[in-house]
Length: 274
Image (cartoon, rainbow, N blue to C red; front, side, top):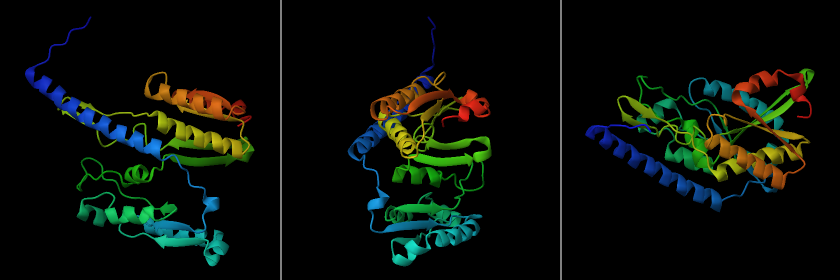
C-alpha cells in the first residue's frame, strides 16, 4: 500500500482543485438535463424556408468565403430564386472586434446564428498561450457547445481505392467540452479532462447508424483509445453497441483502436462492405 505525505499548502491546493472539479461536474449535470429534455433533430425536408447564415471569419476567411458563396449561389440557384433558401451574412466575428470586446463569441453574433438553420463559416483566429493577444477561448468550440453541433460529418470517396467512408467525429465531448477548463493545481501540476456522457455518446452513435441505414452502409466502426482510457472510451463503446444492437440490428458493429486504425485503413480488405 502506497503512502502519500502532503504539506499543508498541498492540502489547500487539493481542496481548491476539488472545488473547481465539483463545479465542472455540476455544470455537466445541467448539460445532461438539457440533452434529456431536447432530443429533437431538425428535419430539413419539413422546413418551408431554410436560412443559411454566412460567417466570413478573419484572416483568409473573407477570401475563402467569396468563392464559397459563388459556388453556393450556383448550386442553390433555383431554391434561392424561389425563396426556399435565404442567405444571411452574419457580421461581427473579426478577430479585432472579438479582442476589443474580450469575447470569443459575441452575444449578438450567437443570437444571429440561432436564427439560422445552417451556418457556413470561415476560419476564426484562436490565440495560443504566449501570443501577444488576449488568450481567447476557441470560437469554434463555443459555437459547437451553444448550438449543440455534436457531430462533425466528413464523407470521403476514392473510387479507385474502393473507399466510400463517412466519419462521424464527436464534436463537443471528449477533450473538447472542458478543453479550456483544466485545473492548474500548482506550478508543478496541471490537469485537463476527457468527458463522456451516456446521452452524448448515444446521440453521435445514433447519427452514424442512421446515416449508415439511409445510405446502404453495412457496418459502423467505433474508433477509440478504450484500451487506455477505460472509463470514458469504454462507456462510449457500450453506448455504440447499445444503440446499434437495439435500434439498428442489421448493421455490423466493429471496433478499432486509434493506434491500429491508420495501418488498418491501408488494408484493402478493410474497405470491403463499408
